[in-house]
Image (tube, rainbow, N blue to C red; front, side):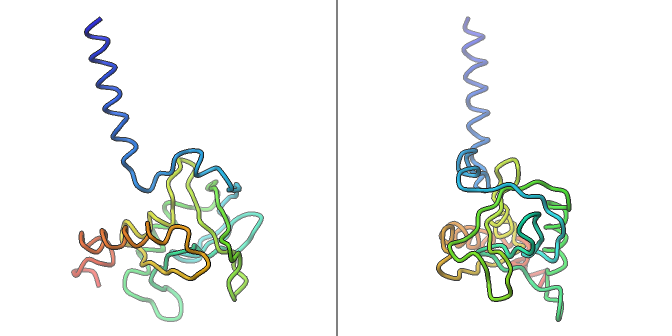
Length: 163
């Protein structure tokens, strides 16, 4: 009996560590108010195409450019998005309060099937800087905190040896 209690405690402690991932949303949060789509194309680090809505610009983030003059870390950001969201990947998305930008792209927050918040992943790993454009400000505080931490830890484009 003591062995079973010890095993149960060890399992509980192990699972507690799983919830510490800041890019993972609770299952309900990632699903509530979102729709399902499939990635059909990647344009660059913060722009892709989703089935049913077409061109999508990720809200709250700005990756370095790869078109019209390649910026430092632009190719790395694009490659990350391509690796994590290759065509055929199913995602959940939610459009912003302002649902389209001046170029006609849908403005969206995107989650992976496992609940990870992709927009936030880009900032946390140093592939993107925060770009807050009201009224789409739902996660602006989280993005700013993630950027501060990425910069302090010299991740990605914040690494002085990279750019």
